[in-house]
Image (cartoon, rainbow, N blue to C red; front, side, top):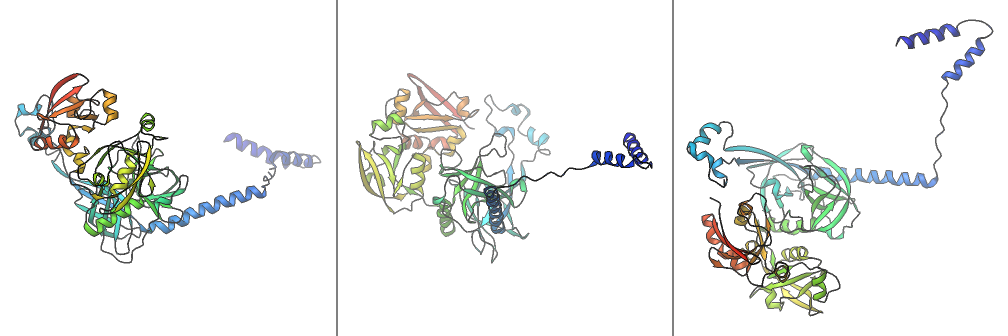
Length: 497
């Protein structure tokens, strides 16, 4: 600082000395202090047009956001959570707290860790009718004791659940209000990869947050989020709290419901998933009308195709769904479908894989007549099938059973492909295809690839027999399996009590 002051004083003194040399000194100062004007680069007409186009696109995002935001709501949820005590956990060598007596945990820990407490949660939703129907995710409002919906204008309403569908993760709420702003619903069948979209919601409680991206992919299945998957994938930033909010196109229409992210950090990593709005529409209509969802049923067990199987069944590429089993008296049986048929088209739409066919059938209203195109012995054939009503035990027959989840076990029918891969014969049992880490099944030594031949001393050859034999275990919490790993057999007993 002293150096700067000294320099200024010197210059003032230097240039205030009168004499013939002043003009030279002024010229010297001018050379030191003058600021040269930097000329702006010239823009071509093409560059200016490109910038204008970008400005117009930016303006379009702003217009869409302004139009959609009033219909996007903040969903605040209050739940009662029961904290587990040590006696409720499956210790492999007995409960270590038993030595101190049954009330040890209660006396010493309950005042610090209450068994029941209130837990707050939050998500997003969007208004679809002027009289207060709101769409959101099932996982946002599941088991809620109290739901408060906060509108963009600051008003708050207590909401009630009209209906939920865990299999698709869709829920419908209702608030008592009139003349509400509504977000129009678009057509998710018409979306294209690369199309611009906006995700609107309340990530981390930051209300009315808008992010922009593109549709990265569509028809995503096998993600493992819900039972019926046909997700839209987007790179528009989605974070915790965005669940239930809309994915909006540049026409200001909701074309999806944001529901999940792929992440290793808990936050945004560039991959988000939204439920297609056309699927949501079908489920919403049923939930509002009846409070539940009725799904279509074909009555077949199907498997994916690989290159070898596709070639074996006369297909040019591994697309479609291979039928391995047809249930007796099912819609498929009545229509003439047989094991070995490959379904390549359903109701006029190409079938690419198993998950796609399952979703198509499930969303078909029971009683609907549908044209199905199959390949049988290398030849195409069209059949007409009347879709049935999905049986109440369908989830269990497909291995989606609460008792199996508690065991940490995933089982599937023994298809010809799996039988050949692991060296088993057909109709010899059901195969384990998944074991959760640190689960009771894992601790008992079960692993993928093992064959379950008996359940509770009853021989099983298919999924129906397997689930029927588990009935006793659901009541007792104990199960006895006879498993085979290639040529080696052994009994495995597991207890959840």
